[in-house]
Picture: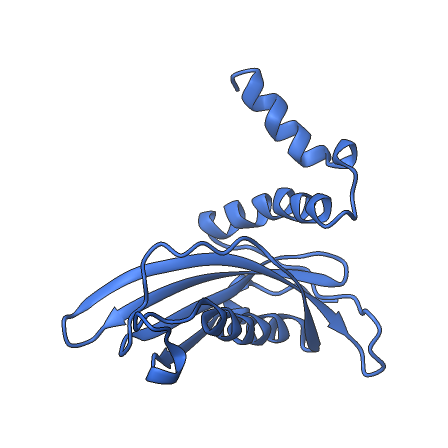
Length: 175
């Protein structure tokens, strides 16, 4: 199976925040943003896998700036690592107020998707071949993020998380 560069999964999705998308403070509802992020991330994962994918996990999503009624949302997504049957997708979300010319990063997140065949069974995914220094850094950090997800989801024992343990022991020894 041939590997793919992260740029092959790069996806940009734009949405306009309308009244039906907001709460009583005219801020975008978090659930609506999570929905849009799931769509953008799924498109990115499908581009990498050339398969139908399903959401397996959503990492912590923190909101740095409120997104207001009338803002244009830009979601940038791309695969940061491929595992056996799953991929990790990173997203950066920006809110732009076009009349004022301001653009702020609202949040970032990682979603994990599993590739499925036509019968709904897991299927291997192509390896990811990072090209830039930033892509290599995200790629290398993905294994630690994955181990943390598995521990928090009860699917891995903390003692088995070798990458996380190495990170903490290196920090304790001052390296």
